[in-house]
Length: 311
Image 1 (tube, rainbow, N blue to C red):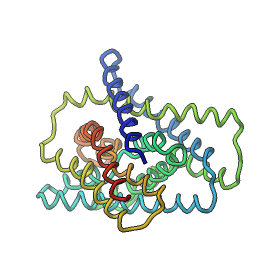
Image 2: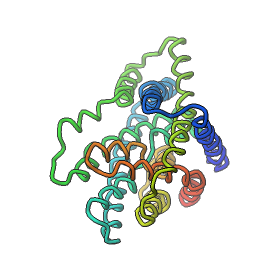
Image 3: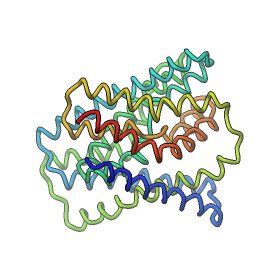
């Protein structure tokens, strides 16, 4: 894998983030506009990336094994990342509540908004599909382990499990059925999904850029609360995952997907999760933006390290 492809893709995404930030100077990023843009990204663009990947990929027993393996690896690695974040925060004498927040920010990445479009640009439709499967594993981790951590005295509820039933997850399920049945979409459908899939990366990056001006004006959390999850998510966690992959033999497609996805910044849903489960919403939003900005140089660095280590 040429690292120049990763660098080029990240540079384009960085430019889109800047464009989004500049747009807020002329178009205020209100709550209503934020919700509309997020709805288009999650409910339209992301499912179309999934369908386009399925339509362009030959799905046989070998590929289905890759799908299952990617999902399992995602759940295991994301859970390990959360555990690493929690133990590190407690070792640094953080309060239990802050340690729980740091755990999620350190172990769970933006594998949907950034990871899927990036894997699509680097690896093509097949890579985008495997990235979507990895993101599905992360979603499963969020609404099970993540909810348990944020509410240590509450078990997983039916309400939290309902969050697993969303449009992208439905798209994966329906798409895999279509692939297994060997159904070919009409040309107009295939063209439509390809066109809408191309919206995902620009809209997601501009959305992140639009968040930046507002959050920069807010009070910055304590330096220790920022530096620890940044170091864990952007450096330590990707390195640990690469070292594990060095020991455990996995198919190259799965390895490449994991290398890229584990290098992602903290998840975009952090502020939403923290707000819903009585945690620090502003801290979650601030960390999302800080980690996203810092990830622009670290993603190529960490992916280059991972690919070099596994040669």
